[in-house]
Length: 105
Length: 236
Image (cartoon, rainbow over all chains, first blue to last red; front, side, top):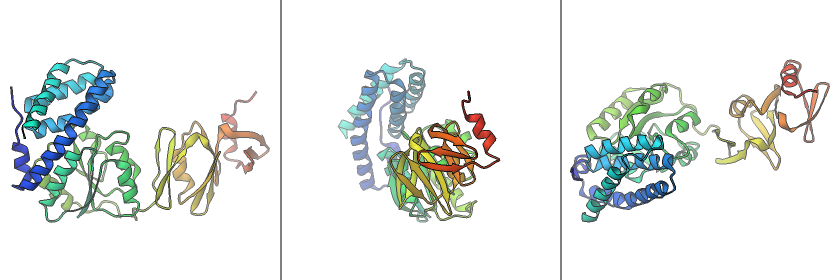
């Protein structure tokens, strides 16, 4: 399975280490909040809202270099808009992967 | 170019802000987590370029562009490439960046923005801004966007460069025109019955000859508007 990485962040920071730290701190703060909103909406079967949450989370998936996971998220977002939760388990395992990665930073 | 960033995601704002920092010709004035805050800012500030997220809760990037008058050059930023065709319909949109944005692609977008001269002569951006969202109408009074419940409006009267919006509870004097507010009000509920008056048809008390009694106001009905008014009534 592909692993999260900081390649994108390094490529766009222009070597600015202070910015890299700032951005990682923002992601560390924002990601759990967005993840929680997603889980709340799934629990309440608010699938349209959950699709919005997946849409936002996609950006962080791509920032962390998860190319295949991004495609899984795209499909899952589409499914949620159709009131289907197909792809839920795969998507949530991506969330867990990112959670573990952010903890390691 | 003075620019602002509008995105509900802090991560995206930080990335775009950093990309701007690496371009000497860009000066980021402000960042906003939602469109409404940006609209308020644009009422009293001029900017040359907006980085605008499309996918925002309540008020999308396209809603934002539709709301402001003479929008400045705009670069859309989104995780979703499917809106590109829609973006072509807007003169102000100079480029469309799909997240995650690379420095190279960002620079191209800036080059495009620099190459394009403003297509529309900029009117002062502190002009009246109005937006409808469901049953609400926002009017700009003394640089504050005040929400009015549309069904509570019973009369709008033109008064020179201003309009007076009368509601059940309160009257508002707004720097705007009857034509502009007419475009924002639902046609199913409101009707222009005279060059100076729009009424809420549901609030009519009675009609006599060429006048309408609405609340305590007697409003003239022009001859040309009378047939349309009569059509709207449930006549026995």
